[in-house]
Length: 127
Image (cartoon, rainbow, N blue to C red):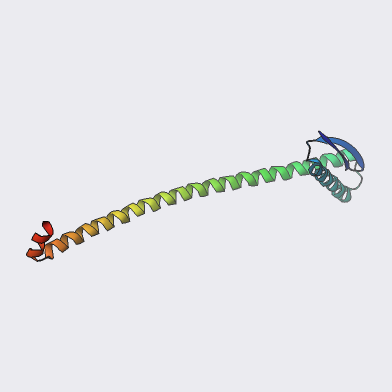
């Protein structure tokens, strides 16, 4: 297990993480530190604990909003999949109707060709 040192609100924290995740954990620490700095700039020195809680609530709110957007997008994707499946079913049904119509037209043309053919051609063609 790897370990990294993360600085948040001027304090260093030693944290463990999976191998290869060190840079990711350090980026997360920098993000939390930046949020606390933004809050400190907006609200002044109101206490580290309070700033940390406000940063955590802000991050939790963003996470909640992201999850809501993800659910909405997943719902949209599912609706689009359903619409696509419905459109494909309609297309297949249309193709079957067109194929049947072509077959029926071909049969009519063959009957017409037999009906208007001279009698001699009918006898020769039957043999």
